[in-house]
Image (cartoon, helix red, strand yellow):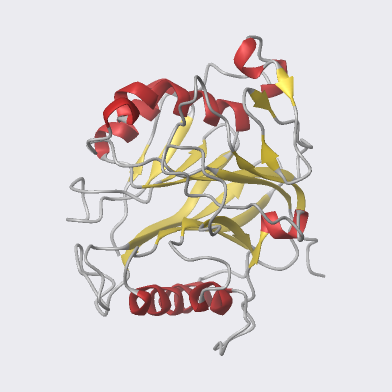
Length: 316
């Protein structure tokens, strides 16, 4: 099982987000639809048993996106992450140089993951970033969504590209608890790949070494009614009692305009394909689709999503 763990310098950003000065973070407004509004920060419950988890498809940094290319939006990406203030950040599509720039611009995060093409540094990552002042890594690894999940670069089930899951078991010093995070990027074209990928994901979840609660972040490239997502929710045949719930839907079950792919145009219609999924027992203290923009520019062609979660009660 391929794995990589990078250590980064300690953070110099110690103040809570709501106390950061400046126009970009001046307001704290959360709409009834659970979308973080432009030039607004959120205020979420903080405490020793709460952890904020974010999922963010960063759009790969070598894409020919003109005025939306990575150098033009990099600082906005940093600002949005600071705005949310996650302890755990599941990224999709990031290339090695983007992760290095995130490390420099957002000190205090450790990094878990390998690139999908060679299991080292070639191609996109599904990296997990975590706050080193709060969390520490107990186990970690990466597997490929294919018939040979331990073979780096392997492609399966009609996908055009390698698809991966990076996972970690993290220990929370503040809560004295441990939890699992699985970060995925499913195929954008092959439904066969998406359905087989979530089956493999559930198999790996069932095989985890400890019964700790779990979180799945990702760009699923599948809307809420897609069979792959229904499988993860336990609505279709399933080998176990694994039932994942979308944290956003727990907080906002009736929300309608929930699109997360915006094509750099701020589009809010369409399916919700990005999510922070949770196992039973997590309490959702806050959740949002982050639609922050600056000068009509967006940090990515996906809206990031986040949830602030409180740990399930300990079993007797």
